[in-house]
Image 1 (cartoon, rainbow, N blue to C red):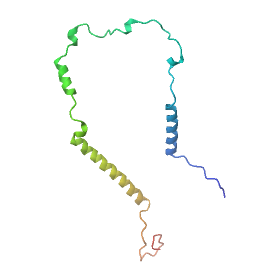
Image 2: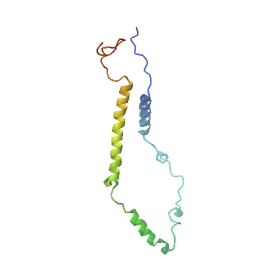
Image 3: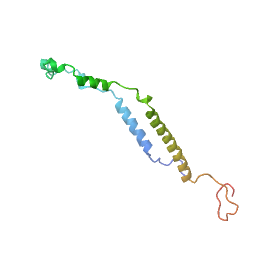
Image 4: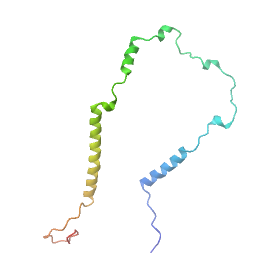
Length: 134
């Protein structure tokens, strides 16, 4: 008789735990940007064309507010928050009731698939009985 435990079979949860451990350790490592190594910048010239906005129109009439802008602003004003609407709570209630029904249904289905409750044997049963009343 061996005193050692049999080798453990790897499951999906073990693989997920190992993957999360490796991911968290890689994410938590400090990052070093290439500019932080102490090198001097390669280009010392400052180009002023980068600061200018060449896409801005020169004509001020193009920048004036139009009536369509006001209509867009009125539509952009937020209405009541979504959780104050009765439809949100109806959908949320259906989701909660469905989740509870799914959990309870899964429990009872697995219980009945595994043989259900132990019942006493019938008195007129002539075969083998493996219940409480054998």
